[in-house]
Image (cartoon, rainbow, N blue to C red):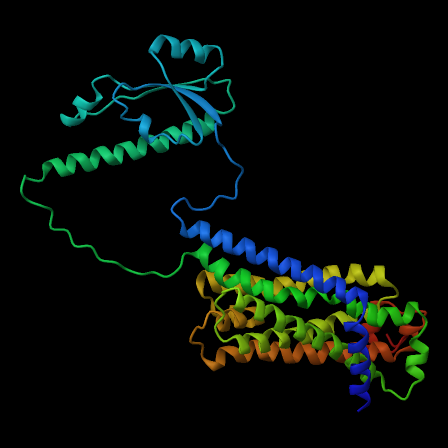
Length: 396
């Protein structure tokens, strides 16, 4: 009952605090921006033009092309290169003056050579002093490869006797989504659900470190509450806050049309993952003397946690590695995408969640029990490790 009282009191103060309201609004804005980005990105991938994250190269360079039969002109990417059709003499004059980057000369009898199954000699002149030449050369080579493939198809078609058609069987084989699309549909959306787990770390720090800086820790400890009631009650309030926001996020995603298989299991899995993360955060906060120190400590700890969550999940999406099941994020991805997953594959992440939760909360409670941690002077980390192992000072 005392545990529930402190949880209720902390939850009330959290939900009605200006800091929480500001954080909630900011996170909601992040969610909307990420949803807009994912929608536009996936729409771009599905479209014929695709999607480009690089700056526009429209009109990047100008080239001169001598191609009376337009055999190559129609295949050059005009969104990148400005094409100027001119005669041989004028084109070289402009190349010498630095007004164009490249001159391309196509033989006048190119069409006849194609019909006679003869090769075409394309002459390419580059300005060696123009830094744009590398990009231009790449674009021209791509156009020449497309032209070569087209000519080869024409030659093959011309070899088929008239009135007969090639007896070609086309077999459609589905290989699933490409890796980039899997990273968006599976990985990125799950990462979005994990954001609240880290964005509420400052509230854990404020709840524990704030007691030290405001000198209210003595009053709290003097109350008829055990140290475990205080730590677990405060952390339960944060976990319930995360659970509330996560429910709102999933509801918004579903209403917006995002496909989430097993939404209830996904919700339970993410909320369960928040328990050890909040426990680790509270352990760092319990040891820290002030907000600055806690912030620095959490920066390093969160890098390790994020790596533990994301790296195995990426390995699973890319090659389906079995060892990647150690990460709770991998479990969420499999639930999110509706895969048929054996129950045994969930035992490892559940086990890691339970073990890390027990260890982190045990450490937090032990640290909060020590007067030298709460009131000072604080011992070093090495000394604390020896104390946890039962090794007294001066015994070695």
